Amino acid sequence: MATAKIGSNPDGKFDFGLASGMFYIGFGVGIIPLTFMSMKYGTRYVLGGMTLAWGIISTCQAAVRSKPAFFALRLLLGLAESAGPSSGGHLLAQFYPQNKIALPFTVVVVSTTVSGIFAAPLAAGLMRMGDLGGLAGWQYLFIIEGVPSVHGSAEAAEAARSPPRWRQLLWLIYDALRRPLLWFFIAVGFLWAWHADRVNEKNWHVAVPYLIGGIALTLFTPLYKVSFIAGFVILVVALTFANAAMGVINARVVAALNTKDTGIGLALYTAILACLGGFSGPVIIGTMVQRLGSFSQATIVMGAILCSAALLMAGLAMWERCQRKREKESRGSAGVTECGSAAESGRKVGSEAGVAAV
Image (cartoon, rainbow, N blue to C red; front, side, top):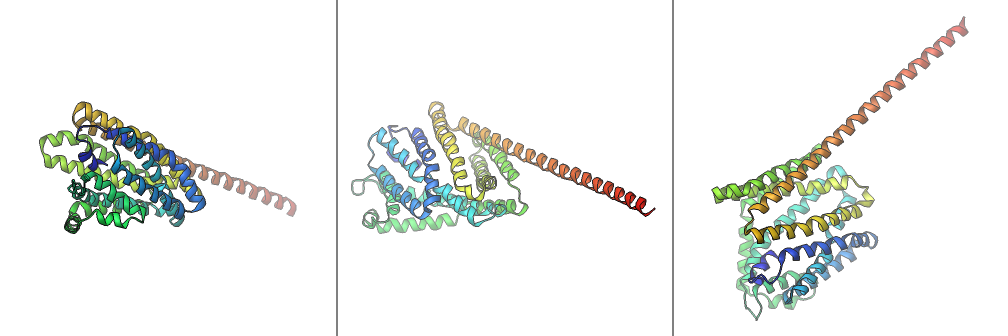
């Protein structure tokens, strides 16, 4: 939607910040019931229906003409997408033990990052198809995004393409694969998740990258004013560390749940995030950018929020460490008491045996 905004909203007709928030309202409302349905009836049918609905709704965005219709489609799109992450997480939890699940979750997160890297140049190429067949580039973007998910509109997909452009898109894919940043993101995410599984520790593996990413975001504006390269580097650092923690924090949530309840637990966790952060984040940041005219203050706010999350995870890590220490001391004192009781009983039996012998 961010790419489509460039071509579809030149006069500010649509409020894209509020539209992003509406998506997460639908996401938060639908995630728990749809996840339960996928657990009860099987992901094959529920996720298949969601994919079909998502393709239809996404394609319909190409025909939007009014603000209410745009908001309604975004709400429905969030509803159609809602149970995907939690249902997928529930499936993963059925096949991987809790001390080995960070890496599988990171594979999902890295796949999302890689798809985003591919999506950006592909979307840019589609936006240049302007006025072909009477449709604007942003309309082709929504159509080609949605039609493949419907599994039945091959003719429409064929009509929307031209051989030269698809050859150009193949080149863009090849160009993306040659970018060192792509492999850098993949390597960092996998190595961090692998280390979290290896040492069987999740809290600090979330707190540390969140803290580094938050500090990097707060430094973006002053460094960008000094040098574009410095700003770009610090932004890469922020995104790298924030993304490195995403798979691990999902694994941490799973570790706090029973295996059979993983789907609903993840759904509730994601629903709260969607309703609170997913809705309020785009609205607040969008309002700040519109009123202040830049992202400078917004990046500082986002950095502060990320640092706060890091402090909360660090507090959880220290609290759990204290709990484990107390439990260990309690078991130790209980063992000493049992040993003392056994020794006393032994002495008593020995005394009685001596008396009997005399």
